[in-house]
Amino acid sequence: MSVDAGQDTAQGAPQNGQPRTSLDTAAARNLATTTKSAPQMQGISSRWLLRVLPWVQVNAGTYRVNRRLSFSVGDGRVTFVKTGSEVRVIPQELGELAALRSFQHDAGLTALADRFVQRQYEPGEVLAEAGQPADTVFLIAHGKVEKLGEGSYGEQTRLGVLADGDHFGEQALLGEGTWEYTAKAGAATTVLALSRQDLEPLLSQSAELRDHLEEYRSLPRQRANKRGEADIELASGHRGEAELPGTYVDYEVKPREYELSVAQTVLRIHSRVADLYNEPMNQTEQQLKLTVEALRERQENELINNPEFGLLNNADYEQRLQPHAGPPLPDDLDELISRRRGTRYLLAHPRAIAAFGRECTRRGLYPDPVEVLGSTVPAWRGVPILSCNKIPISSARTSSIIAIRTGEDNQGVIGLNQTGIPDEYEPGLNVRFMGIDEKAIISYLVSTYFSAAVLVPDALGVLENVNVANWR
Image (cartoon, rainbow, N blue to C red; front, side, top):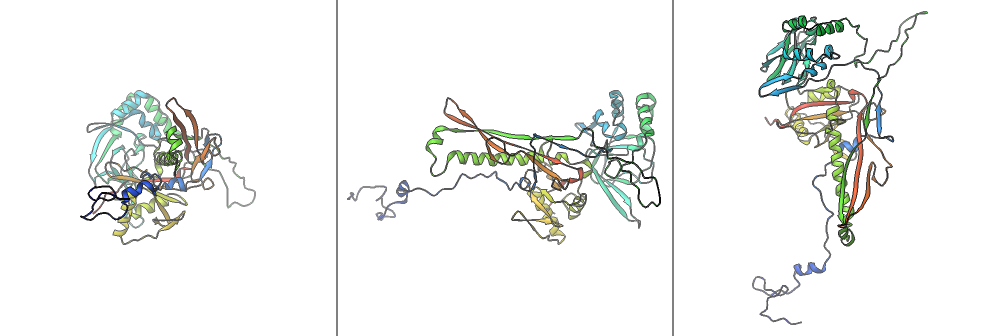
């Protein structure tokens, strides 16, 4: 085959002043089958929570958690309304105080809420001093309050930390008791306070409130264990024919039930694409694969953040801790782990894990990693710290660290799903053909059903408000 030397062609065009002597790669690609990857997706994460949760089959779509009857009431958090710099407590939220739990008189609650006074405390200021009369109810709107006591040798001990929504000094409503600890502001703190002196005029005006508090004061205190459950009467150490106590184990009358939640989407594919463009990769399979990945990401996000069953929202208030200094210190994780037997995993945002690593480095600590499901992950005290980017980071650069004990037999946290559903594609996930419309679009309904249950409160704990941006 001859070509005029003066003619430019794709194959024979001069290059650097010299004519081409072989086939150009651009032309060769037209006759070659390229080597290609499957469609890639940046949004896929490790999804450790889905991998380590033990999944329980829920055939009826609902899982009921039966527990012993508990008498710990009124220990929730109080909600406030903020207008500019002014903070007010929602009157009905005062029912979170045990002494006001069953007080249903709206006018009385409103009058009581109106008597709370807003106060500001700077770091280090004392709100209440141990040994003094407990004459003020404190509701913490924002900030941090440290509870300090005295040890056996006169040293100062830290008994705990209270934060937004917590309250203390409830005995002031009953006009009895002294402060058992010193309460000191650990940060700039805003509280609503009600002194006994301001309460007295209201008690003289409101017979309903006065009678309710008097009735509450006279109630016999139910014997309970440290978890708030009714004691089981037992006898030990006796001799002879001692009369043995009778007992029974009471259950909650209205146990909590978890219904399976759902994450769904409709996958649409043009029939022409499904028919003609399936070599070397099946287009429908690839579309479905990426859709399933997105659904699994949403599933883990719901298990963390869902207001009904998400782990962050279902941690008991007694199992929520505040960091001692802001960033996640080894001491903070020690306290978090110690709050439950057999802590199995810690879940944290990658930036929270990095912040914890920085604090360990500052102290010269280098924890040994552990192996989980074939992967090496960081750990503390032998407890794996698993990455979970679904745990949010606030605008103030704070996040949370979750500690869980897992397993149904271990009274821990479990995942709930149902397998064996029609048109199942993966366990608990199905793909159902919905038809072809007049535009030749094929539709598939992709669904996954799931939930999570906390069998007993101490199976789940959260270290809140950890600073992930401490670089000092």
